[in-house]
Length: 365
Image (cartoon, rainbow, N blue to C red; front, side, top):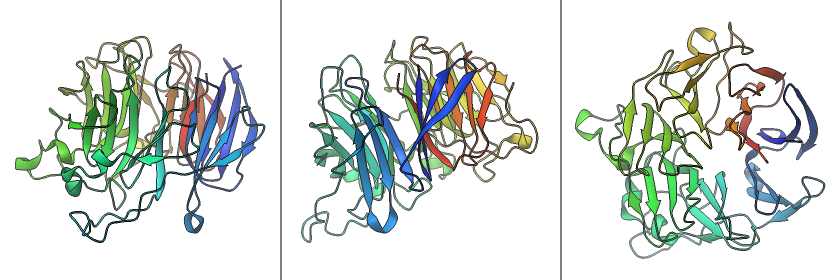
């Protein structure tokens, strides 16, 4: 039976079911903010990242699908240097939020990646028992120009590990563009060519280092096909991020945060539009999902089962997910709505209107 993990401001929910029959089966970390979750398909482990304010960032692991949890080491920066080129770094050297979690390659058992706010990338090779900061990215000189995308500082929210080569990793950074390594993090390249930032002066709009990709996803069957929901619209790349193509804004809007792509069909992707940056609600209070089946040439507006009046839900960048067969989707909002679709988004079933604000949804299967 499929399981959906729902990370919320007041705990982690496990939802189980299939087709039209879904139920909330368990609630973990009740009352505590869960910012990200990972189901490691290599060994079945679950990871939950918590943001406890005064008590800091915590990471918990379950090796038995939620029956028990163990607190693990959390990513942590080294002490900020008092001398040298980074002594005057205005970015704090302390983890405020674990914004993304990703498993390493299929044969890299125990390897995990964590993207944080501020924008540090951490690696674990022992299933989360210890973490190491990726120094080449953190000490990249162009990091000084990164901007906060909704926060005071830039953060890493998307980590894609190439299923063909675990040394090839792609990151989405708000606001720092798209970065890639092909040697496991020893060196990094900025790969945001083709993206434009309309929040910058026109002469700087092409600056790849200032782009704000809200969410970045990859087609499992064709990993060179990447999709991005950008602050300024939708982009796709057919060559692994070397070049990005702007997609004409579909109705009702090209603005949003979430994107999911079909694991088998590189031409199909789903988005959840909002009205605009300055008005982060559905257009006309009507909640919809848009889907393209032809690489962005055209879009369907899908609304069956979603609220169509006075709906003011915002879906965060991790609030949309799809199962490995490409048929079942989950969608959750900051106002506690949770919907599931068993037919690739054509129709939606509301499971709850009353969850805490949702940060992330992830299928375990």
